[in-house]
Image: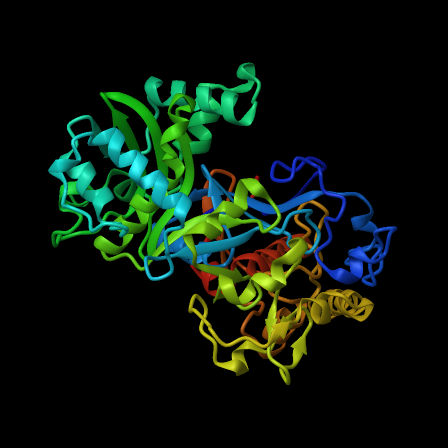
Length: 479
C-alpha cells in the first residue's frame, strides 16, 4: 500500500444529519452536561472542549496504490473509500456514529414493503408474468426477481469497469440535483470521476479478466465459474435501452462492497435502491462471496438507517469483530457509541483485553455482555493517562508529532499509546525498523532510528491508524 500522510479533518457541516442534531454526543455522560463538556475534560487529548460545537470529523489519507485484499482488510477496520481517498470517522467526537455494516442472505428477511417493491419491479420488466414460474397464493418467492430479469426483453444489467462516460455523468448530475439538492454548477465531470470512477487498485484488478467479467453476467450467476471478479465495477441498469441506474461496487476477496447508487428520479416508483440491494445480495451468494458490505450505517439518520432493512452485522471498531445488528441495536439508540465488553476484562488505555479473549478480527461474535464505551472513554482518567503515555513516548523514545500529522491520543479504532509503548519497550518496533518513504521523486528506505522526531511521530501515527502488519509492507509519501 502506498499512501500519503493521514489527516485529521474537522468540518462544521455534516452531510448525514445536515446539522440538525442537538444531541450529537457519543456517550450519555456527555449528553447529560448541557454545556457539552464531558468528564473527559478539555485540552490536548481530551474531548470536553471539542464537544462544545457540533462537528463532523474523520481521519483520512490519499491512497496511491493498494490491492483489493488490502482494502478488504481495511473495510474490516472501519475504513471506506471515496475514489482514492481512504477515511474513517472519529466515533468519539463526530456528530454521527458511522458503523460498518455487512450482511448476507442468511440475515435477509424481505419486509412487506420490500416484497411490494419486488412485485412492482417484476411487473415493469416482465409484464407477461405467465412466462414466470407460478406462485402459490399468499406466498412469496424471492428467486422470482432473478427469473424476471433473465426473461425480460426490456431490462438488462451491464457490468463494466469503473470508467467515465457522458451517459453516466448526465445521470449522476440529474440524480444529485433532484435527490440531494446539489447546485448544478458544482457538479462537474472531474468531481464525478474522482468520486465514482477513480480507484487506487492495481491495474490488473481494474481491468479484470475475461472470465471475471463473464461471471457477472446474470445468466452465469448460478453456474460454476473459473474466477470470481475482483476489482472496481459499475453495474449499469438499462430499461428500454435507457440508463436508469448505476451501482458502484468493489468486488473484494470476502465480499461485494457497495460504494454508491445512482438512480433516475423519473423511475422512483421502481424502488431501484431496494432492487439493487437484493440483486447484490443474491449475486454475492450465487458467486460464492461471504458478505455484502453496505457501507456505513447511522442509527439516527434516515438517509443511512434504511440499511437495517437488509439485516446483518455491525462492526465494533475497537475489537474489529462483528456483532449481529439485532444484538447491538439497543446500544445504538440516540446515535451512541458502542464497544462490547465482557465483565472481568481488563482495560488498557482505550482498548479492552481482546487478545486474551480469543476473539478473531473480522469474525462474527454472537456472545456479548454489555456496552463498555462509557467505561473506556467516559472518564477523565483515560485522557490524563493518554497524555502521560504521550509524554513517556517522547521521553523514552524521542517520539513527537507535528500538528500536521497529529491524531488524537484517545480514539476508538486507533491502536492505544500504551500498546505502542509496549511494542517499543520489547523491540517489536525499534531503531532498526525499516521504513519505506516516497520523497524527492523516489522511494527510499530508512531506519526508524535515523528519522527525526517528526518522522518517527508520523510513522507511529500510521501504525496506530493502519496497524503494525500493514505498515511493514507499505510506503509512506511525504509531500
